[in-house]
Image 1 (cartoon, rainbow, N blue to C red):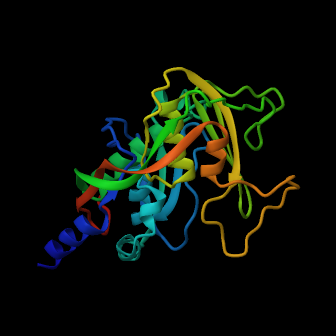
Image 2 (spheres, rainbow, N blue to C red):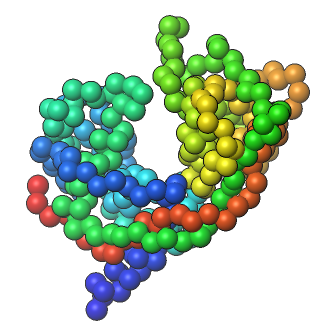
Length: 280
């Protein structure tokens, strides 16, 4: 009876909308993986091309593997779930040779392979079962004033740590932050659909943004704006000639506009997950 109650609770607690898309199933798996309880949290890294390590709670691993948006993780129900499934596990795994060949190569690096293999490990070792449901959520519609749309691009704008000869790849959306309240978003030869996805992911923590601009070309632009919801009392630290605009004002300067809109999103729902793993 207790197990059934936990399953029902999970279905409610982990119901989280993805950015208007479901995770695509993959057959890619770690060749060998050791999973052991651990006493402390750590990072998930893949610096060694043939090796993947991760030390996170079971709840956090599910959030990462199924790309649960950040804004939904603040929901009280999600917080309770994170506490219930807070046991930390350490994963040490060997990456398949075919996947390791392109490990870390931009533009996508290995992030998609990482989460695919982590998803399959959770399904195999923790008996994770899930499904998706369509639900209406509050999002944004991105539109353009076609007569006033004049994307402004800074050719010297680069991601933090990029080498001097770095050339952004087409379709890249690169965020930068300056604590505690200053943000940039560098867009390189991206479609408006890609830009809308970048706004959703990097600015609005997963809140859906739909592309309703009608623009079909690719564009490069740079946004410099006040970080949404900065910490109380936070202020920008660079010597800006004037106060930084909000993201809405900065988009307006580019001839773009965000309007609140109800959108349909795919909700990831956990049906069952074991609190301890099997096999090693």
